[in-house]
Image (cartoon, rainbow, N blue to C red; front, side):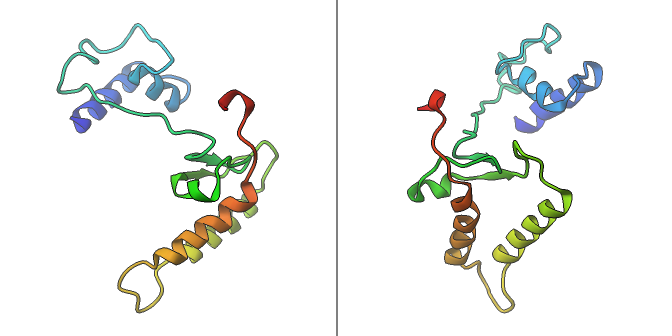
Length: 138
């Protein structure tokens, strides 16, 4: 079903391009952008009707602007987008990404990932980003 949905999305984006693909995802999923050019049966045909959820920008989909989680919530952090409200250089992004890759990479001779090391690497990234929960989200 997901493959059929994605193929419909690609076909739709080809014929009705938006300025940015994330707006197309939003409209195609019917989240907040409405578009009259939606394929017929998109939300009623069980073969292409998919469910989705929105990631929280405070806890799950993070930027360098901040993370509003607690120690107990650190496993909820799924994605880190290297953007911020203040400029960050390409070199700084590169160095931070390389540090993450090196901290989480499997060591020579390891048969399985060391979950404690992965958890510590996650915490070292999240801790400096900690901020309070935005007022509108409380």
